[in-house]
Length: 317
Figure 1 (cartoon, rainbow, N blue to C red):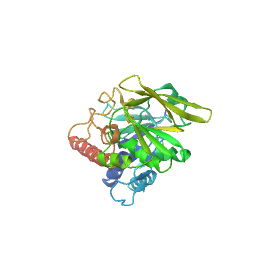
Figure 2 (figure 1 turned 90 degrees about the vertical axis):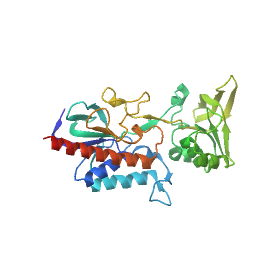
Figure 3 (figure 1 turned 60 degrees about the vertical axis):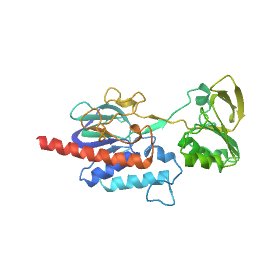
């Protein structure tokens, strides 16, 4: 295993709005950060998002991948060294942090910013994996085109699920939203918009117990009422699962403090984790809002906190 001899001031683990913004801020401060973007999903979940209408500065909206491309280009402009690799191991408790990549290379740093985001949560039933890529999807903007004119279902009741349903309603003949509760958790504006669309229907107090299909893919769902034994079938060609996210933080277990859901705990006034010199930002910290603008803002905070940490270390010498 090779190891870089130089010690970087800051290494950012993860891309997306938080990681790229941290790179921009640090670069403008005269620090040349290293950003490990990941191999499979550089740019984070917005790379699978269609039009983003609520990010300031884009009054006509902007496609998620385009927004991430712009952030990446801006980070590079300010001397952020972006490495397309995955982190497989970390040692954050030492004064000098060590980050090991899948390539076998290890990178040393005086401080680290974690911006690893969160991944789609699964239903956890066997048939979900069986039909993955054959009618089971976690991204309407990625896969909706394949179900043009067909009947589909969306599982979930939050902003993501309702947004997926609205998007699919313009492509599919019918969209059925399946939710475990008797009302949506989505914001009132979004919920009212979905309820006003004629080809969006709702099935309340229900969960998916089984996904059925054949060699061509999904054909129907088996549903159960969460309050009783009532069961029903729903014919559909695809099911879009939008029941939340799981933070991508497992690699940091036993290194920094996390809550019971795996979200990284930071101090009340900033982005400092339980490990000195390690900061966290974006969806790996925020299990509530999960908004690009908030992730970007927390990335800026993490950069400022990391810069302050470095300045304090210089003052100690």
